[in-house]
Image (cartoon, rainbow over all chains, first blue to last red):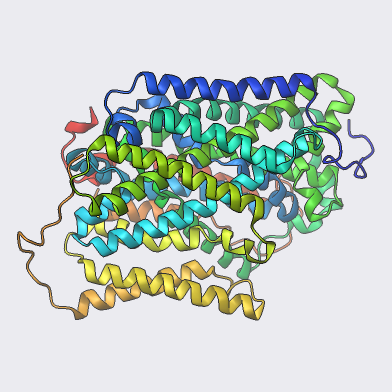
Length: 508
Length: 71
């Protein structure tokens, strides 16, 4: 039952939420603060492990939903549909790469979870220090993690400000939206630490899952599904039917490897491995998680493709709101569907908040455990926890400031996340299964990888080239990183490890 | 199955999801998709099933310890 496209309507000019929608969203935000209070009430001890890892007692249901809500950000709901609108079926690569994240966990999570229980790891840096006995390697990995997560927070805060501004028809400004939601996040995070963050992730994960299912279901039903749209798409967008060229296939594989080696190395993702109650809990959660891209990412990609058939001539900026356009189009015929717009916006806000709060907590833990604690080895657990909380407030204040004021000329630096983060992958993936691998080659490999990445990144930018031979700069840097590890492991003589150089990790 | 074999199988399954062999512009429709897109979805489902099975059966071997903590 398609009707005439209404591409002239700019969804940003009118309030997307009525009083009922704003009340629903407000109720959701208040519930987050209550969850924060509940998390504080059930605190078992004032320690780093309790605050940053929820006492290492996360069961299947909470672990699954916190993994889900953390891995799928607001970008899944908004960005993926928009990318699919522009790229067509080629963006199905996103379904595979979100599955590949679990493929990477298969390689290192089982052993890392076991080691984290035995040696009380709190941060990824704890593992690197334990495994390699190198403070320099642990600190460098920590700094890379903090940069990647910091960029993640800033870009997500910008997105949340834009959503609030659009949803309220500019009644709440971008700045007010960013400040208010940042404040709520940092309050419930510092009240209950990971326990509060994980519990709010349960609410946010359910909202995200329900949002994706309902939106996809409504759009499928109203527009007759992909089968009904296929012939129309062949006429309007014949280029969608063209298979990727060889250069596009290289980029496809490069993207898969980049995400495979990048996303699982996010510090907040690794800390969820540490927070699992048992190996069995983590195993079952990952077995379930492996199918989530088929029920989340695939749905949003198909929404974008249906949008391309329905509204074929949108600009890049307009296509960013393709899901909203489709929902508004349906709501114009079936007013009850307007409720789905509330669900969509709430799910988008929830998805972003669940990602930002986890990243914030992770940065605070890394600063406290990996950077501050080695300088104050006699500090008590309660002092360290207090430092972690203060760090959360400072990081959030700085991120909010950057999200509001960052000049567009250097905003591209915020895009640097995965390509930098995947340079840690060899230290983790090789280190966990190759006991003879030593710290010096790994440290040199990491330094070479990072320097190589930035060198190539700025060179290609100066030459206005997106990629070298259609492969991401991060993958070239990863190859340089691996080559350095291989070469130095071969060249440097193996020295027996003495008891003095045995890796140690502080007991938590 | 060794840890190396587990890693290799999962990686091969990942690489096979890229529609390497599709090169021509066939305008056929398979369940609402271009053939190469349908191939990608189908192989991604297979990849997910493979990972699910490997997680279920190879966990303790990948953990490098006994199965005691799986309980």
